[in-house]
Image (cartoon, rainbow, N blue to C red; front, top):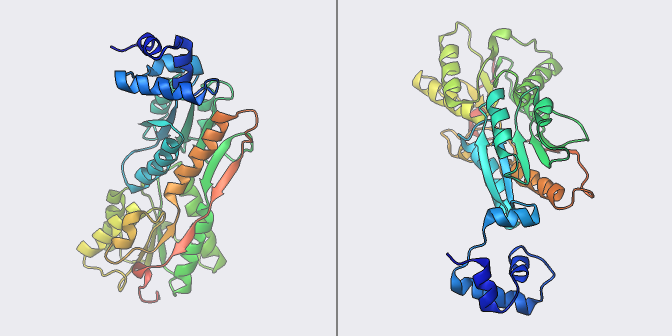
Length: 335
C-alpha cells in the first residue's frame, strides 16, 4: 500500500506538505501542489479519509435522516441534497426512522462523529428534545418539522396555503361535497393541509362532514382503500382532495377498478406534484412543491453553518406551494 511517506519521498517534500496538499490547505504553492498531486496519481496514493478527518476536523459527509426512503417525494428530496452536496465536495450518509422515536434516536447516535452536519425530516413532536442529544451548536437543518423558531435552521412547505388554494379551486368548479384524505396522525404536513381544507370549506360556508375526513398514511395503498370506502358509501363526494400525490394515485386506481370515471364522475386532486403526476391517466391536478429545491436549500443552509458557524444566521424558511391544474379535477359540478 502506498503511504503518505512514499509520496513525500518521491516528490521531494515533507510529509506535512503532502498532508497540506490533500487536505486543501492554502499554505502550499501551486507548483508544489501540482507536483505532489501528480506523484500521488502516478503512485496510486489514496488519502485515508479517517486520518484526514482527524487533521481537518471534517468528514466531508452530511447526514440525512428521513421518515422513509420509499417513493418519489423522498427520492426528489435526496436528489436535491446530493447534487448540492457533491458540488461542494460532500458525500451523504442516509438513514430512515419510519416515524419511530427509538429508530430516530438510534440514527442520531450512529451518525455522531461521522458527519459534519445533518438534515432531518421528522414530524416527531418531541424532535427538539431528541436534538438535545447532538453536540452543542452542531449544524442541523430541519425539514417540515413544524418547529417555528429563529434559533434553529428549518425549511417548511406552505402546506396551509397550498391546501386552501386546492379546495378553493374545487369549490369554484362547483363542488360542495369534497372529501379529504389526510396523512399520518401527528404529521405536521398532514395537520396543516387538513387545516387548509377546513378553512377553505368554512370560507365558502360549507360545513365539513366528519365522514369525509378520511385517515391515510401517505401511501398508494391508503388511497386505494379510501376509494373503496367511498365506493361502498351510500353518499359519495363529488371531489376528493388527497394530502399527497401517492394517495391520490392510489385513489385513481381504486375508482377506476370500481367503475367510476375520473374526472367525469369524481374529481381527484393531490399535493406535492411528484414527477409522475403529470403522466397519470388522467393527469393529476396537484399542489406543486419544488421538492428537489427543498433538499437543495436545506443543503445550502447546512453547508453555510458548517463552513462558517460564527457568521451563519439560523432561521426558518418557507417554500411556496402553487396550484397546478390538470385534467383530473374537471369533474361535473357537484350538487
